[in-house]
Image 1: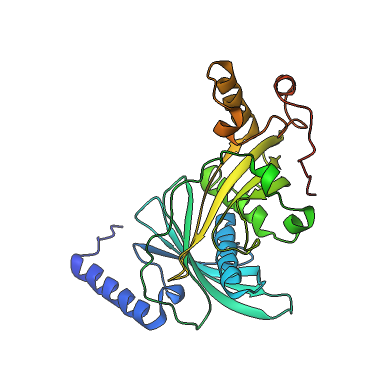
Image 2: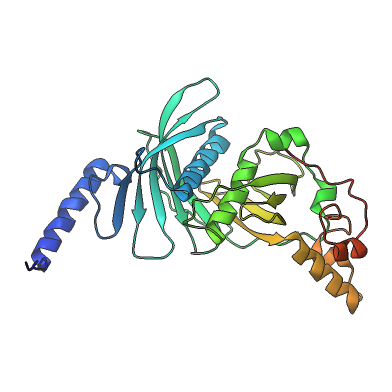
Length: 303
């Protein structure tokens, strides 16, 4: 049996019909897939992928920051995924619940600005039915954050209760790992937050623009690894567009860079790495123990 290819007239008619549906229902309520848009419905038999769940949580986090609410994800109902490029956008419809047990349906969009990098932009996060601003997003910083000249864990370190009560800190680490290391995986993250610092001088943890330094232990792949994630959060004050940019490094790599500077150049170690000798003394290798101080007073384990 031979299947004939659809001619250009049929393709044009199908595209026009889909465009009419988009005008009528909006992209979130697209009724069927098309060449550049794939439609998925999440069910018990076809659960939502981990990456999409993380993006849905990012959208809720943006809404909570701007509105002062505390909604948490209950489930993703459906989502639209763009096609044609390696870096994609996701239009998600989800249910969320707040501390008063109030259930709301949300629509949120998260876009990957570059494939394989942790650069994520959220320009829609709203209760379903709310309107969206048509203003374009301009001037949001997309550059990768760098390690500061001074050790952030000694200057603005968060308390244990602060870390426990803000689950978006762990979300930042999971987004970084999913975006750069395990995009399509379903392996459960086994993470333990060890210490969190920030560049904030005022505004508290809900400040719209801040950089966070998150030291964590990762046992997701069996052997435990000691790493630090550096994540910058920015919000366009005009449009409310929200962007997360960051990267992760094994703590041992940072220590190795520090020892390299000591070996030949007369450059101050802290100026280059932002990490003091004792930053990972309690988890370092035997070689690291010889190279770093045994003082671990700045390390706070968050169970």
